[in-house]
Structures are given as C-alpha cells and as structure tokens.
Length: 99
Length: 206
Image (cartoon, rainbow over all chains, first blue to last red; front, side, top):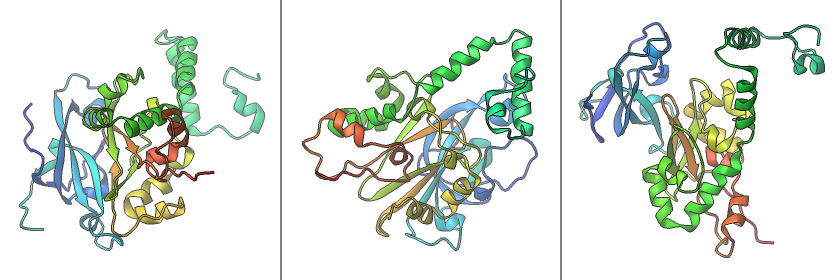
C-alpha cells in the first residue's frame, strides 16, 4: 500500500469515536499536525484485537503536534511538541494555512 | 498451596486477587491445559524477560557517545545498529530519539505501557500509572520537574506517545567532564530513567 502522506504534509486527525479497540488517543482527535515520518506498514490493531489476522497492512505515521494545538492552555515553550503514531485511515489532509 | 490457583503472592501478602489477575490465571491455565503452551515455556519467557535490564540500553547509549558513526546509524536504523553490538532485540521496532541542547525527549504510552523491554527490562510502576500516562502529554514540564529535571524554557520538550508499533529509547546528552571515561564507565552513568527521558545523565568528578 503506497502511503498517502509524506514527511512534512499537514494532516488532521479524524474526529470519530468508533467502538472497539482504538489506538488513536482521544486527546489528538480533531487536531492538526504534520507528518514527521512514514513509520512503515503494520496490520490494523482495530482488526487484530478481534482476532482478524488476515486484513491488509496499513501505513503508520508519526505525526507531530504542537502542544498548544492539542492543549490551548498549554504552559511552556510554544515550540513544545508531541509525536504520536497514527494509522493512515485516521488522517485526512489539512490545509496548512487554516487552523 | 491451598489450591492450584494460589500463588506465592497470596501466601505472602494475603492481597485479594483482582479481576485481571483471575483472568490472567484462567487464560494461562487454559493455554496449558489445551497444550498451546507449557508451564515451562512460560517460566522460560519470564526468565528471559527478567534477565533483561537497563544496562543493555546503557551499553547502546555509551557506544553512541564514543562512536559517532554508530550514533548516526542508531538514529537512522536502531534495530540494525543495536544488532551490531550483539544485542538480540527480536522484532522490536526501535526508534532512538536524541536529546540535544535544543530538544529534550520524553517517552510515554498513554494507552497502556508500551516500553522497549528488550533493552530496558520491565517498566517501572510509575511508568504504567494513570497519573504519569495522562500528565506526561498534558504537562510534561511539571512531570519532569517532579523528577528533578528542570528543562530550560529555551529548550523544546518533545513527548513521544508510543501508541502503535514503535518503541522508543532516549539517547541522553553526554554529561560534560566525561572525556576521560571509558565506554564501560560511561555506561555505568546511564540509568533507566534517563533513557525514558524523565532525567538527564549526571556526572560529578570526585
């Protein structure tokens, strides 16, 4: 599966709350970040959790968020950041100009 | 033992067995009963895990401090670099993140307790606590201060939430005044917490 995003692309985490075993932390859902790197391809944990081992691999990314984007009242250096591993199907392209 | 479910822990502390402990015991006994695993397989796996500790990670850090080429390959492709030291880390998808004068890295797993066990052994209890897991991403500087680590406002604090398949090891900064130390002496300075990023490596000349 060719990764949809490359390092440097602006992305937004989808804002869903599906049931099941989700590895996308709640606190970054809806947040905008930048692809730090393509981290390889892995089987989807949301399927693995239910014993479905034959589903295709999906691209995994490390997405970098500014702390102030995630926590608007964040105290500290405005450069402080947060890197989170997120699977492709949780991401959509974001317009880097808009917040 | 009173019953096949009693463990050494029961005898010593008389702490009531929790739901998840019961679940673990039940699954373990079923796996053995159905012949999927043997008790010996489990003992060996525990033994293997217990034999690993932070001194393995410290060895990696010390080599990176004395060998710039190793450091470069460690940051680019940690699993291959670690193998050249003769360390067996299995299929671990290791990523080493470097502390510099500009960036301080901190590792957490907010969803559970993912940890580079093959290089650091079992995680400390606080790493698995709800408090550390929730606060490390929300107020990392306060958490660091509680560990006695005061990161200057000029430095970027970068938290890594280990949410999927990667595992992280922090490459701490080599402390000043250690130019004369051997690789083994350097490794002895590197403690577990500095490779999680909650502390820095200290050295005071005697």
